[in-house]
Length: 217
Image (cartoon, rainbow, N blue to C red):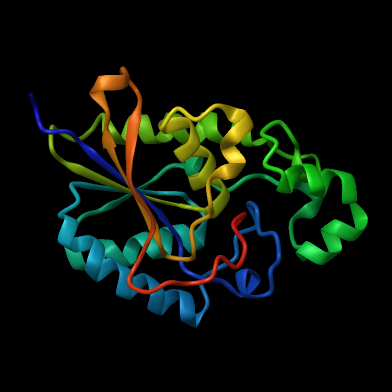
């Protein structure tokens, strides 16, 4: 049996909006000083996994997080807009409290994990998962047996892609916890369950436990 490829879903470092519990979505908010430090620290650990390829969302906070890993591995970073965070329409820039006050029913459905809700009139989790998995499939196709891809993305995009990759029914996607800033999940190809499916080996891994400030960022 050939060695199985690995896929690392790595969430970007912290931003000011993460710290303020603002829904970032596709707003291009940069890393703050804490986020820069998180990226550098996590990059040293992820480098030990000897990635063969780094792909990132083209939003600045993800691309800059990926650059920290590139600096210690010598790899180049490929960006793919398919790995962007959820487009959350009019919710972007609002705090969780503001969204709950203005859109109580939609916010409650979103927090229940309903995959077809369109936050702020934007993208559903189903749509985000479809484009993110397409981007991940393209990246994995460029590495050989036993090699590792690190994909730098966002909390919501990572969570929905992970649910799709491991074959969870959409009605239980909400059972997956979020990723803390600069933490990651590790997946391995799962040939026993069929093509295109992956096995979750680690989730929300990192050096020390960090709070999940807000996942959609």
